[in-house]
Image (cartoon, rainbow, N blue to C red):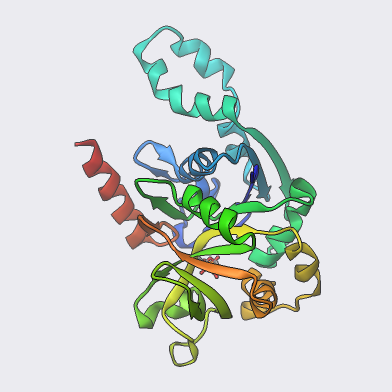
Length: 271
Ligand code: G1P
């Protein structure tokens, strides 16, 4: 059983300035739910009830979101508005939340390494809340099944247009079947002519705890940052990374286009 899920949420969200000037990007709502809540819901659905967040300055709203808001709750007690808090209350009760801070923005690999204190010696999920995923079965639940079979690191992938590969970690390897590939090569944000394929990692990982020692030994990579993709290459060279083409949809809510698409998609579901 994988019980823990790590959420790196320290990033600035500069693409959404000025909206993210004084609030975390993970609190931007798609309809009425902030992005981070979709992510935590997905983790809980997958049985990961220990929610570990790597936060930074200006991220307090996230902690407050997963806590009781006495004044507000007192105000609306007994009214029809109370219903609107049902889902978040459910998540607050179901999960345990812990937080640690990333002091400097040194990349996703560094954020994950910062989370070691919360994760310990356990396999764990990683969700990047910017990538909003939805499917008949949650993407993380699907990945848990893949982990149970292969017992190694799992990354969720999807095909992206060739001219967009430089936004992602790109993988290639030996196809096991239509949806599973044993990864041999992983490159973080390659130029299109250097990309080994157009299969991009999206913000869902299951990692084994040996990744922490590997991260400690990994030099800075793309953008001068510590990249989890580079650490995973060490695992991939030993045949210990499976790329999984998930069933469902993913919206890049780190971009304005993706955010608007997600909003329209969930709005139509309501109608
Ligand atoms: C991160 C990872 C990248 C992955 C992407 C998915 O990049 O480093 O490998 O493809 O998330 O969203 P970022 O978007 O943080 O630049």
